[in-house]
Amino acid sequence: MLHRPKALFAMRAEHLAMLFPAAAMERLRGLADIDVSLVAERFDDPRLAEVLPRVDVLITGWGCPPLDEHLLAAAPRLRAALHSAGSVKGLVGAACWERGLLVSSAADANAVPVAEYTVGAVLLAGKGVFGLREGYRRRRTFTLGEVQATTGNYGRRVGIVGASRIGRRVIDLLAPHDLELCLYDPYTQVAGVRQAGLEELLSSCDIVSLHAPANDETLHMIDRDRLALMPDGAVLVNTARGSLVDTDALVAELRTGRLSAVLDVTEPEPLPPDSPLFDLPNAFLTPHIAGSQGNELARMGAAVLDELERLIAGYPLAHQVHHDDLDRVA
Image 1 (cartoon, rainbow, N blue to C red):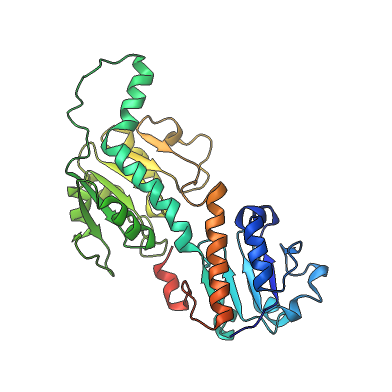
Image 2 (cartoon, rainbow, N blue to C red):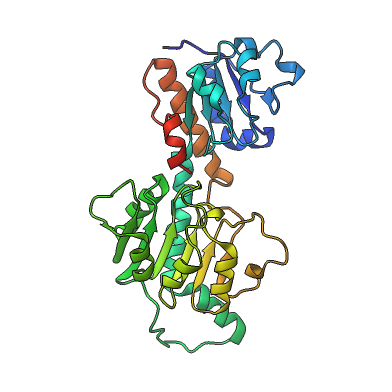
């Protein structure tokens, strides 16, 4: 139990009001001793010299400096870092794990809009929306009642690569639809969903959605040979990490017109202005927006406050991040 801890914001100040709107700030002030006007964007800020030695909890977010040995030395009472964003890979280092710091992430809250975006992309892709929109824009006319024989979502085969928190949520959201779902994950199975090897999934599914973490094992897992396995007319959806896909190989395949892609993430990111992906009609690009945007940030702030309440009450954190999990999460 941690009675009324001393807390400190550590993130880019511009995000604070969206993560913690007025009602959330009021709730926070009721839980912790915190100066809501003080946001640490760097830990060597002179204003923090008298604050850090008394801090029990850091509420971190995008732009938070790494929690290194210098920060830990300056904050001897620090017990927990509650992250109001997704991945903590670039935030928490060896010194934190050696210290036994409790680390929590709002990645589950951030998974909600990513899964929603993905489901929208899958259903629109199955309906042929992206290609038909390009054709309508080019011809400026259409024939009412003309049936597109290759479109529709009834019985459409959708492959999910990675049973991550987002991948599992996508599966749940797609379950009520008349789709055939298939999963590739070498570590995890999902009850009621057919498991397949990656090559089998790629060669048998109309739409493939990527939800694997970025690590050495998954670097360019979707390469030239695996793209070639996908059937004509198939669609690749990537809302995970750009490094999962060999960009040059994807561009070469898209240029043939055989496949389409919906890409919210790319490698590199952002793309260079002369990237062919901007001009290919079968590449639908968005600027890394599937994750929390606008009012969706408040969901992540609320998740952090829920974790703070658990910490104060002495309950286990619901979304604790463990060192051994880092390689298997995004």
